[in-house]
Image 1 (cartoon, rainbow, N blue to C red):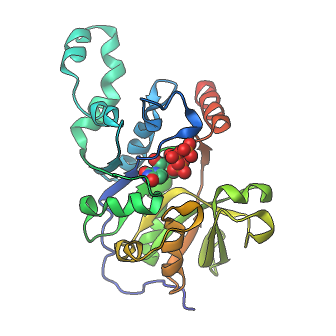
Image 2: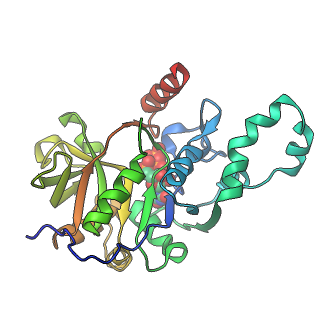
Amino acid sequence: METPKQTSTKEAPPISKCLFPAAGYGTRFLPATKATPKEMLPILTKPLIQYGVEEAMGSGIHTMAIVTGRGKRAIEDHFDISYELEHQIWGTPKEKQLADIRHIIDCCTFSYTRQKEMKGLGHAILTGETLIGNEPFAVILADDLCTHDGNGVIKQMIEVYREYRCSIVAIEEVPKEQTGKYGIVKCELIAGHDDIYRVSDMVEKPDPQDAPSNLAIIGRYILTPDIFEILKNTKPGKGGEIQITDALLAQAKKGNVIAYRFKGKRFDCGSIDGFVEATNYFYQK
Ligand code: UTP
């Protein structure tokens, strides 16, 4: 299988949109998530999804496409002006606490679509097709909170995409006993790199003895738009859900998926332990 490195001198199509699948129920945080979206849970004073939007902005993306569901309206309100509140605190020291979110609202456009039935991450991404259209795009799962000293993870991945022009998944090493929580890749390092791999196989949430490696896909992707057609033909997989891993496997079989071991740190804020760890980390900072 050939490594899909592009040698054409033509510019790679730009990545101008970021999709945020945010329709999941967040059952691990019940009862907090009964009426509040998981993506709105705060790490200190900022909701998880705002960290994700800021990461996308740091890579030059200003068009945010959000897949929501019932009970998620707080996300739309967060990325909108709150006239009454802003009027109330205008001219007081509290005004500066809204400076970051005002900047986001001024610089970005937000569009939303609803996933009517929660049929898995793959289905949520397919639901976003109407907002993305026929172009490569970034995906951020806001409950995976990533920090970095230099470039954000999505910016790092866009650089890899420019070179290979195929789907890119962010990976990290996980303890072998935790493979059952992730999509796990089988991959080979590309010559001359120590963090870029060609993917030949991937398995959703394998038991440790069946896992092809301990390299886990985290919640950052660059996807080429053919993924939508593949998703339309992807049958429900593990857990009866339409899995993005199964659709990516179809691309990987053609040599069209690169795994990138990102620089930075990830917190699994979809779990209580990861959420507490992130809170402590940002508080210390
Ligand atoms: P999770 O696997 O963390 O599921 O989804 P969840 O429902 O959010 O949380 P738990 O497991 O019940 O606590 C990973 C990402 O995919 C989105 C979620 O919103 C989250 O960002 N997702 C998942 C959807 O948008 N739709 C789905 O049908 C499933």
